[in-house]
Length: 88
Image (cartoon, rainbow, N blue to C red):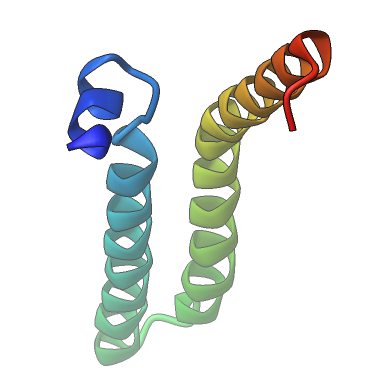
C-alpha cells in the first residue's frame, strides 16, 4: 500500500522503469536494424550496430540521470531531516 501511495504522491517515479523498458526495446531495434543491413549486404551494418547501441545507451543515460538526481536529493533531504531531529 505504501508503494501505491508513494507513486500517487510522486515520491516514487514510474518513468525510470518505463525508460528501462524503452532502452531494451531500442537495443533490440538496433540489433534488428543491423541484422537487416547484414541481410541486404550493406557494408555499414557494423557501424549501425556499434554507434546505434552506444547512441541508445547515452540517450537513455541522460534521461535516467534526471530521475537518479531526484532520488539522491530525496536521500539528502531525509538525511538532513534525521540529523536535525536527532532520530536514528
